[in-house]
Image (cartoon, rainbow, N blue to C red; front, side, top):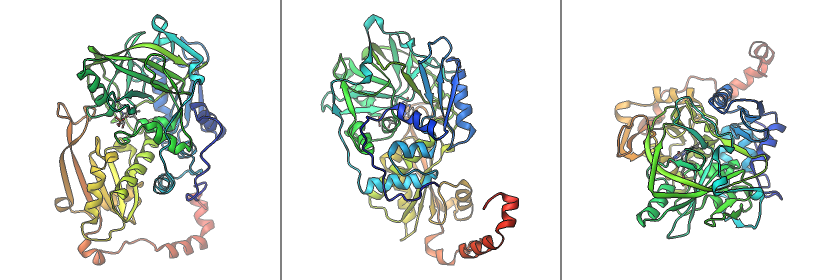
Length: 495
Ligand SMILES: Cc1cc2nc3c(=O)[nH]c(=O)nc-3n(C[C@H](O)[C@H](O)[C@H](O)COP(=O)(O)O)c2cc1C
C-alpha cells in the first residue's frame, strides 16, 4: 500500500482534458507499460493481451502495440490500460495505492461526500477533428483492427469502446460499451444485450421506422470507458458521471452528420446509423465469462459514413477471455464501489467491504462483508446486492460474510462458506433475474437466470456461542513477530 490516506482525494481538475495518452504516459513513468513492435493484428495481439493479463493479475502492465503487421508506424493499439490499482487510482484521482480495498473505499467515500455529476461542455474543436474521412473514403481497416480470439466471427474494432446514442424523445445521451465488429470497410455490427440502454434507444427509432444515429468511439480515456461499461442509471449521461470523477466537464465536439457529442480528445470515432431494414450475422466473440457464448445471430448494421481520428491514433482494445481479462481488475474495483454505494444509499448499514471477483467474471461472484447488527441483516445485504442496478445484471453468486472476513481474499471467503453456512437453510435463490445471451448456462430466451444468496455469516441467534476462531490474537501475533523478526525474515523474506 503506497498511501493509505484515502480521506483526501487528489485534486481532480487539471488544465488538460484527460485522454488515453495521459494514462499511457503514466503507466510508462511508473514502469507499468510494455511496448511491443511488429505484432500481427491477426490473433497475435489478442494472444499477447492474454499472456500479459494473466502474467500478474491486478498488477499487469498496459501493452502498447506499434508497427503492427501491414500497418504504418503510429497506428497503434493499447490493451490493459488500467489493469492495476495504481493506474485506476491515477485515472480517478484517488491517492496512489496498490491495495484494491483502499481504492474501493476511496470510490465509496467520494460518492458519499464530494461527488457531483458534471455535465459535458460543447467546444468547437478538438484533436478528434485532426482527420475526417467522409463517405467513400471511409475504411474501417485503415486501423489495425484486431482479430482478437481464434474463433471470433470477425475483426472487432470496438471492444474498449463506447457507443453513443441519443434518446429521440428525451434528448438523453447514453454511452454504453457494446462490442463492434468491422464487417467490411463501411459497415459495422454492434451487439447489445436485451435491456441495455443503447438497445432500448435503438428500438425507439426502429418503432418509428427511422434509422438510429450512432457514434462508436474506439479510442478513449479509461474513466469514460469505465462509465460506459458500468450500469449508470437510466437517464444519466455517462459523460456527467465520468466528468464528476474527473472533477471537470468532458469537452465534446458535435459530429458532422447528426450533431452527436464526440469526446473532443478521443482517438477514433465512427459515425453512422443503424438501419431498421438491414441485419448481418454477428458473432461469435470470446466473452467476459470466458466462453464464446452468444453464438452467431443477425444484428442491425451500422453504415459508417464518417471516421474521425487523431494523428497517429491509438485504438483501445479490451480482450475478453477466460478471466482474469485485460479489463477485469478495474471493472472489479469500480463495480464493487458502485454496489457498495448503492446498497448503502438504499439504507443498509454495517457494510465493511464489497468485492466482485475476477474469477467470477466480475458479475457472477460478489462478496459483501457486514458487521451484523440485527436479525436478517445478512439476508438484507444479500438481497440488496442482488437487486441493486449495479449488481443485478448477469449475476450468479452473492456471498455475505462477517466483518472479520476479507471479501477480496478467496481463502477467507471459502473458509466462511465452509464453516459458517448450512447449505439447506443459508442459501436463498432468486429466479428469473436479468441476464444475457452471454451467460454460458442459458441457451434460449428469455435471458433470465437464477441468483444464489449464500449467507456465510455466523448464525445471528447464536453468534455469541459460535466457536472462537483459532488464530493468534493481533497483539500476541505482533509481539511474537517482533521478537522473532530475524528468523521469520530469513525463511519468508518478509519483514
Ligand atoms: C470490455 C467490455 C465489453 C462489453 N461488451 C458488451 C457488449 O458487447 N454488449 C453489451 O450489451 N454489453 C457489453 N458490456 C457491458 C455493458 O457495457 C454494460 O452492461 C453497460 O452498463 C452498458 O451500458 P448501458 O447500461 O448504458 O446500457 C461490455 C462491458 C465491457 C467492460
